[in-house]
Amino acid sequence: MKLITSIVWLLFFSLTQVFSQARLPNKLLWEQIKNSNLVNVKNKKTLIETKKNTAFVFLSPECPLCKNYTPVLNALAKQYPEVKIIGIVPGKSYTIDEINLFAKSYDALFDIYLDKNKSLTNTLKAKVTPEVILVDQKGNIRYRGLIDNWQAKLGVKRKVITEHYLDDAIKDINISNYKFTQTIPVGCLINDL
Image (cartoon, rainbow, N blue to C red; front, top):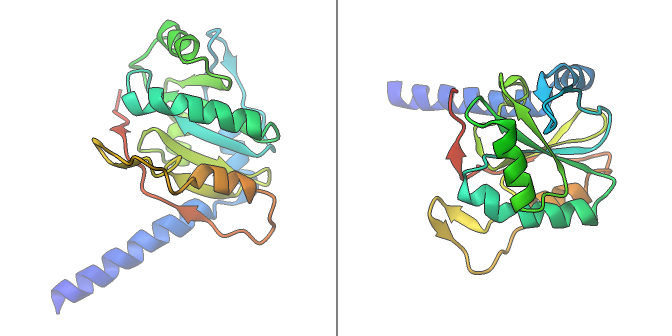
């Protein structure tokens, strides 16, 4: 009986966490994003433009998945110019020069910022790279998780991509009666540095 009670509480707690992440007060979420302490690739503190549909993609310049997904993100940036795609490199592990080299080597068509103190990373509760969090212009988290289902699990890739999660979420970004969706991201854990 204790085991069943524990499972029920764990399930309740997990669902509460998912819904609370999806339903932060709109204004509060954009204020937290705006107040994040980010540095652009020119090593200048910058503020994220708020109140615009934005896909935050957490990246690591060393992560093979991040490198492989850059062309996909570039294609989405071209296809949906009304949605801002922003790369976020969390922590102190990488320098501005390393981030610039990554952006140049993979011809990133989207802005990439260093989140040295992980303020935005913590606000959006990102856990791995690559992980995407799509926020609409009203401050609603519309989607969280994988870019697509190419990476079945760590080290296992599909030959054919059958689900385009981020693309689908961006297509539906202006639907007023949206449903928050989430997948479990696969990638390199964001470290504590």
